[in-house]
Length: 366
Image 1 (cartoon, rainbow, N blue to C red):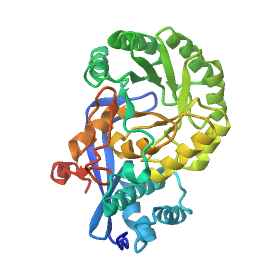
Image 2: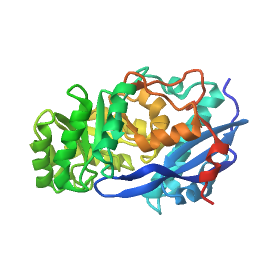
Image 3: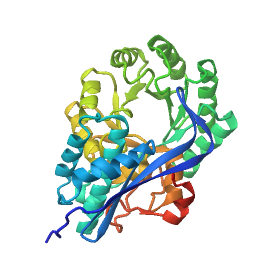
Image 4: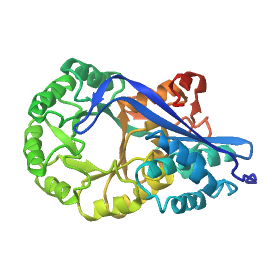
């Protein structure tokens, strides 16, 4: 019998964790990452979710979103999700609102699975038992030596079959950096590049032709994700078998539909910490299936793992250095890569994560 589970307290806290070295991509530089943790209670259990966002997302989660879901049945995750969508209508569904909804939605799914005594992957239904990952980092602030050590670690220690580096901060240096990355990992692993929207379309096409000589098979956000015609132009001119990917800044299903309908990408990305949570991620996966487009999960690997097991058409999940490091620091139960993949621990209910509050205390944003 399903337990009675009226949603009660909703709490949110922000934590700012310094990076282990300065990090930058083609359009941004940072020395810390802010994680917003949300907890929801019902039926004597506590569900947990999180996002990587501004600390302001915590106030929204504990305020308007808590009011929207409090008292509802914890079993009714679609109704809770719809209520949160209505609650942010006038402030907009993207940006901080999207990340706050994502964290609460993940906490609600974690709670529901815990109330049922199930790992979330089992509750959702698994399409696969393990999720392939690719190593992601290679920040433009790294020396060639730092980049080499990081890439080789993913290949040699974790068995990754693909690795990704950032480009675009200093475009004139990128051909040398791509060459250094290829030499670091050898001929076997796939090599991906990510410009984070730093380039113009013709500039990106020219760079793609250079990358093709190093066997680069994935060009992420060669131009801004807001420029769908530009993405489509680049996609039409990169040498085969190179693919164009984007979608990490998709916040709504309408955003995803527009990108797919424009023919802007070969591979759609989605981020459950931004795209309205696990609910939004799975709905995006269904949309990709309708468009016959593969899906790739963006960042936050511990948050994505169970949903990634359930998502049809999922190709892989990003093992992003910054987030993988934070999740291993602050959560018991974070997955460890083996042979280029991660798998959920089916002995743990929900997301399988336990927050190490004492370890996180020093990073809490007051």
